[in-house]
Image (cartoon, rainbow, N blue to C red; front, side, top):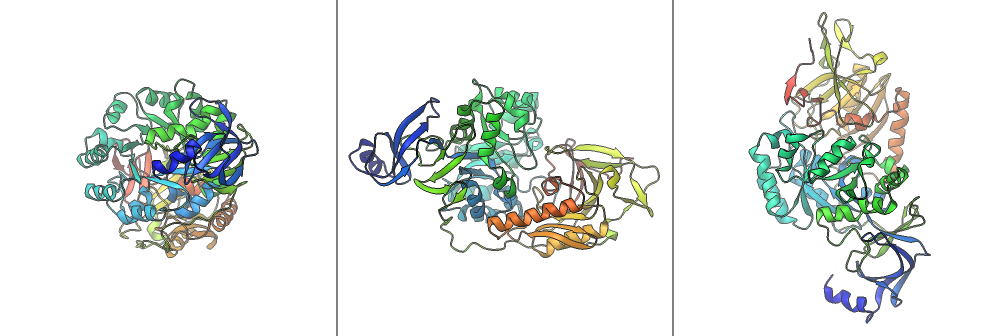
Amino acid sequence: MKIRDLVPTALGDAPADAIVKNARILDVFTGEIEHANIAIQGKRIAGIGDYTQAGRVIDAGGRIVLPGFIDAHVHIESSMLVPRQMARAVLSRGTTTLVADPHEIANVLGTAGVEYMIRSTEGIPLDVYIGVPSAVPATRFETSGATLGTDDMIGLVDRYPSRIIALGEVMNYPAVLGLDRELLTKIEILRSRHKRIDGHAPGLSGKRLNAYLCAFIRSDHECTTEAEALEKVRRGMHVFIREGSAARNLDALIGAVNERNHGSFSFCTDDRDPLEILDEGHIDHLVRRAIARGVDPVIAVRMATLNPARHFGLRSMGAVAPGYKADFLLVDDLEALSIHAVVKNGRVVAERGEMVAPIEGDLRDEPGALGSFRMPPLSVEALRIPARAGGTVRVIQFSEGSLITAAREVTPKVEAGAVVADPGRDLAKVIVADRHRGEHLSVGLIGGLGLARGAVATSVGHDAHNVCAAGVDDADMVLAAQTVAASGGGLAVVAGGEVIASLALPVAGLMSNLELYEVAARLRAIRAALRVCGTDREVFMTLSFVQLAVIPSLRLTDQGLVDVEAQRFVDLWAS
């Protein structure tokens, strides 16, 4: 919108397209609440004051008006929803802007995947900004479906300069510290175009953190303790407090936020499934939780609005003020944060948690499937681990609420000369199968899933998204993996030789082509099936991180077991 279109309305010389009357506006700049009307012209706020002339009137009814929420770091693909269905889920919860890193689909489809995410979100009533992926492939330890090189990145930034606002999370911090030429070139390309460099540095401290920051990386969403968050803030980083489905860090970190430093904190979900968005919320849930933990409501709202907008240079977002985008929420109570309505681009799009406006965009015919599968031969024999007398094996040990794994060494259970799962000690077998070339298959052991019978499989596996299956029965594991492959990707739960629940994800093996509530219904069925298998844990979200060889300490890719800290493959047998 041009300045000349806003000024007459702001002066009161021309009627507004719409006004919001009877509003109590939270000023995120001062922390005050102002009783006033809001004049809207097009998609912008023209003014705040005693405006009365307008074509449409929105009666706030004395409710509090807050800026629309911003998710500072999210992977849309991890919702298992195509972007428009993700928009439907989060808009109703007050999120009007996402900063999305599409490195999941990029690792499967390369530039075509990134362009799909951009094109499928053009023109929809949700602002989706992109961090162009820095890690495709994520590491040298896995088989990825694509490579995103420096020439590809230049092309993407040149084609979509207003949509790409950052370099996606620089996960491979050992490569930064080791002065990897290609990664540093990617950073320099985005820095020269004045884009943010997004970080990912779990546990990095001291001189290693200093060195990482010398690469102009200014954010992190991997903190797990207050001390870690505060060290990074002291060194100039902006910390995104994450509360996703697998990694839940808000309770551990929120105590680090105070009146002096809160400008260096924002909220993000990273990876959050649609059931939790529908049942608990999105960024609104994090704001509510922060307030319940004692954070001043004004500070909590700033962390969801003004702070991420300023960090990413989104100059027209994050506040209810003249010239800013007309993206805001009407809430009944600031602490309970009950959202009465959501206004996006000057129009009401949601009321009482339900969408009242269509999610339409520029791309008319969204593809219902993308990508292909090439799997290595799967059989019970291929999963066999021959026993060794007196030997111990390495186990990938997960704990709830954390992505960091422990590397355990145990004496395995052996039957008929082979290592088998041991549900009595919460030990399952796990495999990762290369689905891009069909060349590699690796087998290991995993703890922390809680499976007592059956098996599960998923094609969602950060970041290469090879097929991962885990279980206590080898035949069920094979069937689960084959079910996923036959669907073009997805989730499957198998018990006693039968598929008892599944969800196809034919869009790059990552996203469903079904609508939001159908996906939610199938995920509820999968949760019920997991209980049949003896567990109520977030098994699929946990399995999606088994392959991520950039988070300590032990991971399994299609090529083998990886010691992340040592950056090398290790044998399953420790002794």
